[in-house]
Length: 218
Image (tube, rainbow, N blue to C red; front, side, top):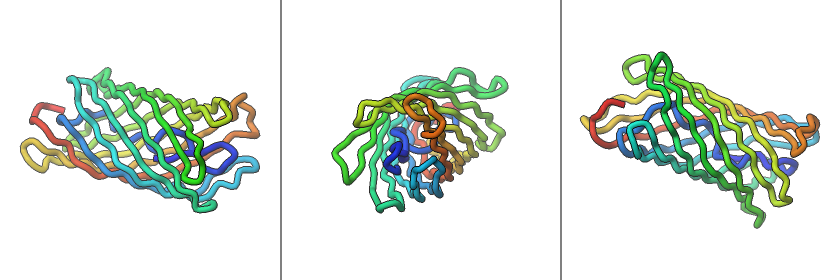
């Protein structure tokens, strides 16, 4: 969940983290996400620690397709500015453990800062590879590309990469829990890809939730 507003000290318009382990929800999945991003590097950019928290919902709309919606807030230590972000994303599982699970994702996202009337909008697309190791344990790794449009009508591309480990234990015949730990990083480029405007940031996130629905195979 969160964002790095180039030059102003915050992050990109997609909600922080991959938050998708390549698996499909039973039917409906709800989760809470929280994380920390301990500082960033960028030439002349005084970026501080950022804490993020938010909610995510996923709805299965086909055997291999899910619709995800997420929203969250972030507080950066720099000036203690709060920011909000949201996204809508389609997740499509292309391969199912053959030998890896390959999923594609794409969506739209937005970001607003509490002390400003400006709104940043963006689109994103990417892919996730994962593997079910048994006992519903799944390591995963993904990448996203996220060009965003700032208030000055400049397009800033972002590259996100990350991975983690998820566990979906059965809690009831039609309910699975969800526990995932993820590390992710971001690289932000200037509108003209000039190196001296690049930004690097990274962090850790924890996701806790549950998936509800019928007992069909995942």
